[in-house]
Length: 555
Image (cartoon, rainbow, N blue to C red):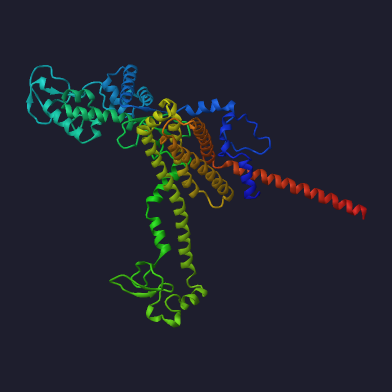
């Protein structure tokens, strides 16, 4: 297999994607590969492909719904079922709730076996209790008082209950939670459904408001194609179209999350890796690793002891107070000048040579290495998260104060300063991607050495380019904010920042694609190298054999 340097050279080419020549990126004509080296694609797209790529990126496989949008969709679905099945809107809403607001499922089940669906859902064609033919008083099935017919109400089953008992029954059920949407007749033996009309007729205004809120939320929470935005205090929902491998969505509240697992957006890392990483960050496993790597159990009480002083004389905390040697864990009364003094232990060295401490030390060393590796990736993951939050704060500060100030000082309309906002938004997105590349790297298998080398190269290039963009928009902008008046260098700054933003965006998009593809190009490169090496070996063998025959002939 080729050396690491050869592999990196193959994928990097001669172009420095984050060099000061970014200004030429917009004029790329696709002829910069004259040296014949393969191009991994972490550069600007060709002009012919840029329009198609932009069109593809602009296509969203989801739609953000406001409350009025949700209500409109809900009413439309109820109307469709009501018209097709010749049912009332109340009955149609009961059917849709039962089948998780799937219009197609309702139609399939209804036309397959209407009677079964009616009995299951509680939409009865004829009443169980026939209506009274005269004006005699009826007995309520709950309070057992006699009431005139105008005070008796029943659903499709016909069981008579007074309005007072109905109101109490409905109010109690609504206050119990969303289960009120599946309300049934108060008669224990009856499965007739209680619809929205009964609530509107008998419930108090407060209970109606609660019921309507549950009813609206059920359209999202019971619908397999929709989810609420998980951001705190956000009332928007996402209508997602399945079939795309990209689950990242951005809500109107500016929160981006994964529709599949509802964690924050985490491309290029898959949901299972994110779940493992979050669990690892919150679990006690790393605490145990730290204890194993940095402490030893007291020989008497077995409590873990951390060595925080220089000498080997250890004293356990009260009530144990056992004094022992840190190295061999033997009683300190058996130690002294003859065993090496306070800073060494001859007994430990002898026992170690005899192999008595090999397994314990090996486990401690493994725990220490594991902890150091995890700390390396976690610190960088957390650092990029902190930088991202800082960038979001800086963006807000720019929008509320600095943008107007910059517009006044540079005599430029705010509409022409959007390139700065775009740069900050790109930094926020790139910080998110870069953050999750460290989780990706942590779970990258150790035996895939070539992939790890290439991954770390790509990650380093991405980090370097992002830092350059971040520094430009964060520090270079200050001279124009603090200037006394318009600066002639502002247009150059605009060109520089827009160019860096564009190049960084394209690099990170291609980085995400490469990581989501499992760095497959490394495998294909290795396979090509293997075939090339095999071909060269075969050719050399043929030449050797021919030379040998010639030698025998001359001899």
